[in-house]
Image (cartoon, rainbow, N blue to C red; front, side):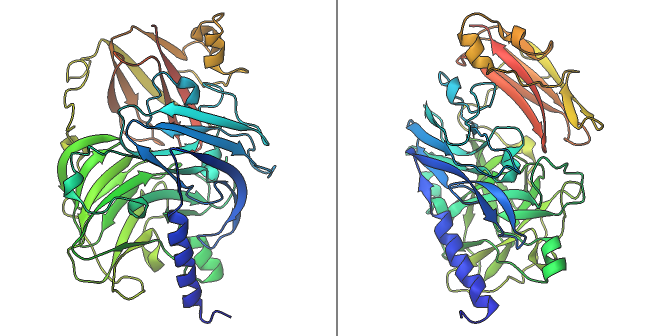
Length: 454
């Protein structure tokens, strides 16, 4: 009754715009439900925050106290039904109980129950995200943006628009419930703000689903907040014919850095300023997955979204783009506190901890330094607070590394063929009351705890 399929797609895009406008916070309710997801034209049941994917943006300001009442209304027994929510990138100093790591900081929330996550973000601001931290559940859809605005943002005068319409989420999507190995033949779709085109859908249904549309007005400057919501796949992100200026990464302001493409890995976030300085038209937004972790390529508009100038026709772009100025992460420099803890050299921290991961294909698990994570029967934090146990007594030998207070710690994170290159991270424990480090690759988990002995 609506006419042509094209009109149906436009109606769907209007619904998409409304869905992306949903925000809650810093106080609000978040209902976790089962629902059908078919925004890549391949229907499957999913685990959804607020009934949408991605979930509603949770927003607030620097210094706010967040109180998010999470209610578990999951009913589908084909998937995990308990849940927990982790606030990715939030330090949780003094509020470890709100970190949301099932069986580490809390018991999972069982169906029909609720948990109020009550925490203060203190002096943190920037681009974050939230996701289930119960086994592999977030791969079934429980993930969304978490934005903390800064009234004293040093770049406030460098852009004109920064709201829910400038949030860009990048996610991989499989057509079966987790935990299914990502090395399987199941199709992966790249979703930009929850929309994408799937190889499997195109082969079986011969249709082109709607794509996410980011609307801009000529002459205005936009702060786009890029969030890697992936379970596994990293994405190479570009906007044809538009340069980007990186001003924030993972909740830290950086010196402005001009690029035209950047890799966004699972959990990574960037803020980039883009000026709408091109002729009024439609331009491809590309999020090409690493070929070994997804289906790369742009045939039929896969791995894509649309940057649409107000006044442009409502149609797919025809632009081409070749990156000549990709982001080199070594060029990123912190704006506020450029000096790392310890000495800025390999082995320059007070304590050096190697994190060597090994994948065991037969058991489908990782280990860290020879130890595979085993979930305890009672959350570790609760047992420690009881005063009766030491953390090392509660976990397999080798899972806990005890640290001295007010010390700097260097983590040597070694990649594997499923994970990537070696990383070096330095952490300052001067103000932290505790710290847990968790390494996640795809749908598999390995874990090691760093305990600050205050």
